[in-house]
Structure formats: structure tokens, C-alpha cells
Image (cartoon, rainbow, N blue to C red; front, side, top):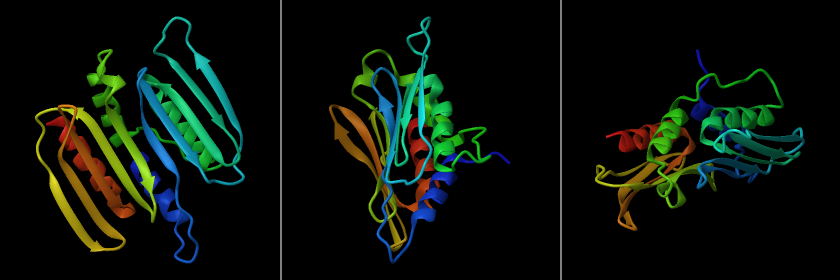
Length: 199
């Protein structure tokens, strides 16, 4: 069975959860405007340093740059290198154990969507972002779409089980999808996001 990237994020979040100790994640993933992707994380301890830089002299759209220290990971890459960047992040978090993403599944869908929208202009203003929030929650934001379905979901079963989605936001004549959710709803949030950009 192939490992699931979003499940990995959930498990990592759960590993940090302690009701008696306030320890929030600080995770940010999103698009660059050149075009490409970034992953920025801080707040870890005793991780191994990484320093990687590759720039294909024959292709301006083939590059990756990572600088990680004992408590911070900062990685950036071209669109085609996104799976590689995510794997480096996982290896850093897991101290280089055998955990490896073979197929980045839900994130691959967003990578394909982003690539289909890039035209030299669009990527300078729009894209896809995932951010950790306080209290072990997540935010997904997509902008730069038009004529998509209106989604308005408000579910709160408990402080640890909730999801709010609104895609009826307008920004510079484009539609915005915005979702905040508890950690256990993250896969469902990605499902909604992927469905929204696909229809």
C-alpha cells in the first residue's frame, strides 16, 4: 500500500498533540510565482542538516533548493520537482527512516491543477496554499478560479472534529476556495478542494 502524504501530515500533527503542553505546528506549503513550490517548517528539534541545490543549465524550469537545520526546513523547487521536495521534507521529519512517499496522491492532483493554470501571468497572483493553524488545525486556500460551484459547509461536532468551507469569496474577479478544519478532517478537506478545482 502506497503511503499517503495527507495522512502523513495528519499523523505528524497527532504526534505533536499534548493537551498539557502547548506545541503548535508551523507548516506552510504553497506555490511560487516563477512557477514552483515551497515548504517551510519550523519548531522541530535535533533534526539533521540538509543543504541541496540543483539548477539544470538547460532548463529554467528544473531546479530545487533546500536548506534545513536542526529546527527549520526551507525548501523550494520547480513544479516538476515537487514530489522530490516533499520526500526530502518527510525524510527530515522522520530522521531519514524508511518512510518514503511513492505516490503523492492528493497533492499530485493539486500539482497537476497548478501546472494546467500556469501561463506566464496567472501564477504571479494565484495558487494553492496549505498552512497549519493554532490548536492543531489546518487551512487550505485556492484562488484564481472562475465559475466554480458554491460550497458552504459548516460542521462542528466537537472542538476536535470540525470543518468549515466557503467557496463564495470573490477576489480580483476570481473565485476563492477557503477551508479550515480540525486535523482529523484534513483528508476530507483535500477531497473537497480537489473536487472543486476539477469540475
